[in-house]
Image (cartoon, rainbow, N blue to C red; front, side):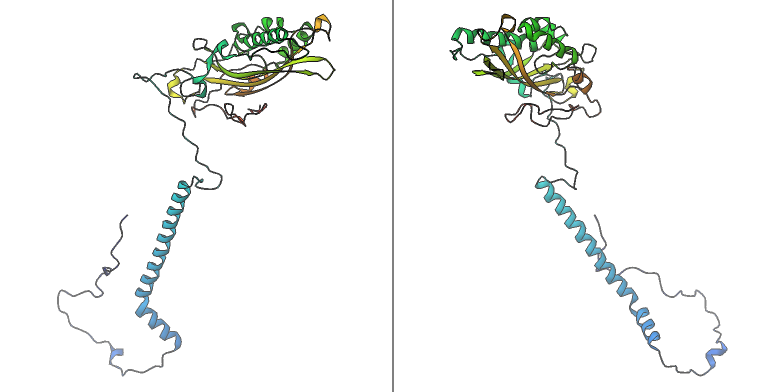
Length: 340
């Protein structure tokens, strides 16, 4: 930014023009008359004072205005820098969005894999992620009954979240694991699209498609206790809390931030196994007592049908809106997630 030197006087045009040739000066008649003095009024004195000092006054006022403008701009710049330094938005309601982390690529610019640079990178693959606790007696259930119940729950997790037939929309293997009297209710939930809390099905007509090559990553815990349900029946209650991460065949994934081709589900399912002495034979076995799920990066039309697909926003090249709670964080609560 440049400015003129205030000490240098402004250049102005010559006040009088100079004749190039002498010419006869003619005196007008009124100039021959004797001068007559007139008393100056207050208005005349002010006018003469203004004419004499107008240039200086205007220059002084201009200098003051310039100093004020420079001060305001300087303070605004300092204030903006200070707000940026403090992490504050530059104006109310306009926070700076953090830039997505760059995706790691190989020497040819290709993505190193769908899970790289995401929390799921460290998760186990498939069934290896389901680790059962030691089976101990929990009266009135024996250690063997506890072990059998845990084995049923593990199979339900495999068939519900990992099996290819379920992912392609066929829940028969999962339904066969349940107590006969619970199958009709769960089958109805599949038909109504209310099964996403315990089973993963994909929209087979959606694009991109589910990618099986890289496997399904998961992480979670399994706990159990002996309790009594609301009907007074003794049950072994098994609670499973897992994160399931599915990758989709997104074209040119290196153009997107890490995790853009991933759909993540986080669930909390309560399974009941009633004590065989308290129920009839058709009620013995595994029951789905309750289920909550959070989904990240799937579209609402798919979720309403109890399915998942991949949400892609080509213009922003970012995943869909984040859930209300961190799906990977320890503070996650059942139900924290996207709303449709």
